[in-house]
Image (tube, rainbow, N blue to C red; front, side, top):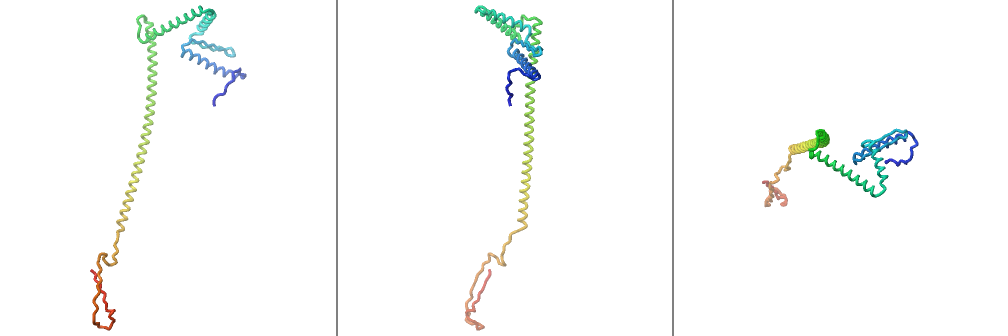
Length: 241
């Protein structure tokens, strides 16, 4: 949930008023400092608490800021006609050109150019500035390399953990395959033993299944030793080959 809007009016509770003053004062001083650094602005800030205590911040010095403010206010007060305003802006433009020239000269000196007119003290100051700049660059470089090494180590640990997990899975699969092969071998051996213990039999019923059977009827005889009917005189002969 976001913070609710605070009514811009005097806080009645003294404790809450003091806490709010402390927080807002620190934030205001921080913003003034950031404005002076980021924008190369000359900033002067003065705050008096309800108890009369002074809190101030100046990017250069408070006295210089106040003098510049009074001077500019007087000049602005006298700038009532176009001629005076034109002169003011010409002065400002000349000041800006001078600052730009100075910054370009400092940049060339930092690059090792136009060092002929510098003395020992100026060269030492320039050397100190370069050493401080080089030290800052090296610190930033070391920090970036340290962060990259840390990230690579973390990635290496993750890859190592993944490899360990894959190796464990591979061992599990190999173990399962070995168990399956063992079960298949045992089942095959059991089937072979069952076949060897129960051989197949052929039922012949006392005769060869391929033996041929032939039937032959004998001729009737004209005389019989006994007086039996001629119809019973038939004799059935079987030959087995």
